[in-house]
Image (cartoon, rainbow, N blue to C red; front, side, top):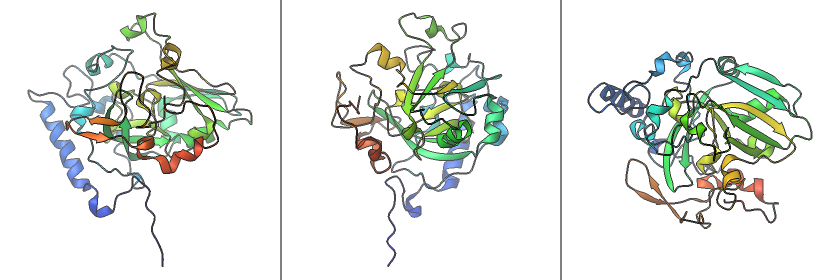
Length: 321
């Protein structure tokens, strides 16, 4: 007898939200953007650029990878796109309008460090090289709120293969843009700009690590971290760096921006664990954006089966900060 073992995020097809329902909802939300509400992600905010103005718009929507499903409904685009952390543009959540000042063309991504194939790629050239797909992921912020997002992009392992890391490369260091002329938050000297984050090479080649180039069937909006961001769904959201311009392969462990500011609260690993509270609040539950619902937080945000093995031999590490 064949026993089918489903991965934790995989729902039976009968329980998945029908595709036509998802796209009809998307059309509805796009439609109300032109009215008095004006809240949808890309262009519904008055005075912002429309997604169709992005040179990569013709690539979307991309095929969905049905290996990655959810145990909950997708967060409404109008909600997810108007409640964002992006400290380069402000310390509040309603930074979507301010983020439209970020120029995303031309945009280049440097791949360097301990690699055999260092290179500088135009973002559109990078998109042309990569197999794009859509994945449905949970997103869990360290601030104890969550959402469910249809990211589009490519597996980070594809970029690792492109770079061809050398044998002594152990970590990836990600760096975002630094342009205080358009990002007023970067004028604040108490933040060590530019934003930096890091991960191990083993984490980078895990099947879940994902480079994001689109969302909700369109190019990535600026408030989400256009034109290229990271998604690590088993970690707290601050690890998923936005608007990436450099990826360096290193022997030394990178120190992220938030770890540099307050290592007792924001460490290198930042794996989701409901049993380990933040020093100033509990992580046992999370507030789901747009619903008012509170859910129990899942170990590794529900992806333990896929990632727990990455950490089994680590001793004395604060894996959940």
